[in-house]
Image (cartoon, rainbow, N blue to C red):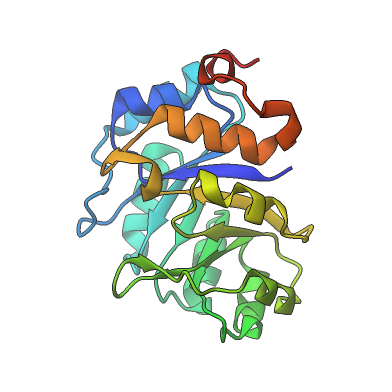
Length: 227
């Protein structure tokens, strides 16, 4: 079953509501240059997870951050995973791994991406993220051919990230790879930066996780009640 990671949360009530849905990971961005930079108090986040979920994992998302910052936020928020979205080196990942941290390394990809570039990172990372976004222009790489994922010969499970929405459910479910583990739920589902539309998120996640025939014509009210 494909799992879902909702990323870029920066609202306490929105967080609590998301934790009532079958979300597998929630990402908190720690980057002052981002409009989704997490400013939630650490204790508030920890309590929300303790009171509302036993399974959802906290992910701290960093971009070329000083290692001291990563370690500080991991301890403050009790982060389960560290996601690295920048140009972090293999040595940087190795040093973080020595602190017993679980790592997710993101790679921006296009139709010409050389997947062998990920191989050395596999020694220190638990997951990869293959991101179709053009980060320079902050727009999706809509021309990406999903069949190119077959070129990935590694053994690490991976996330897929782009501006996915409900209209992409069939394409996502058609990806034939046992290593495809997570889909990122990003800004497509936002009411405003850091605040997700719960109905849209619920609809997308249940369609990703359940057979299409099982959920067709079911109301969001039924979905929200956990069937």
